[in-house]
Image 1 (cartoon, rainbow, N blue to C red):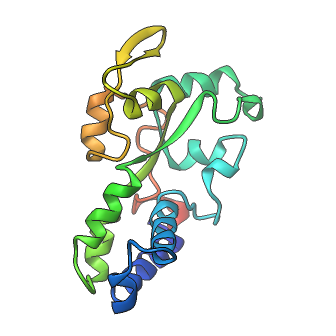
Image 2 (cartoon, rainbow, N blue to C red; image 1 turned 90 degrees about the horizontal axis):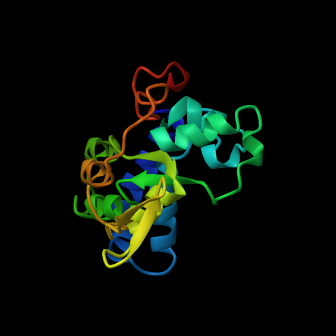
Length: 192
């Protein structure tokens, strides 16, 4: 966890400890602030950047797990990653979904401890997958979606499931070069 993530944890804890905010967490204004803090927790790097703003994908390669299929696309464009069609081939998937994390955080109740907030966020991350894989995760079970030219039924888990359930349902495997990446790692030298 880097210092910016630490601060987001403290801000989330503060928001959940405000009577007005907690009572209105699903209402206009408060909901957007809460969602933004939760979403950006899994994206903000020690350089105070978001990986998706880096068109060379170097921050994804440094801090995020990358699926085997997504890594193949990055390898295809090696040195020319800026030419990867934006949002057409790769997808940054929040695992678990933002909505699941929000429910877990509000489920802690009014005025949770900072440690409880950190525990909820400890395994939350963005994983780079292919757009095809994202379509299968989010898609309808009554439709077929292609991955590597093979049809798969949609899993309809856009806003559902734990990280493990989603990874297992997709049979997602990480490229070994990026399998141990995580913004949440305590051993991440850039996070000291």
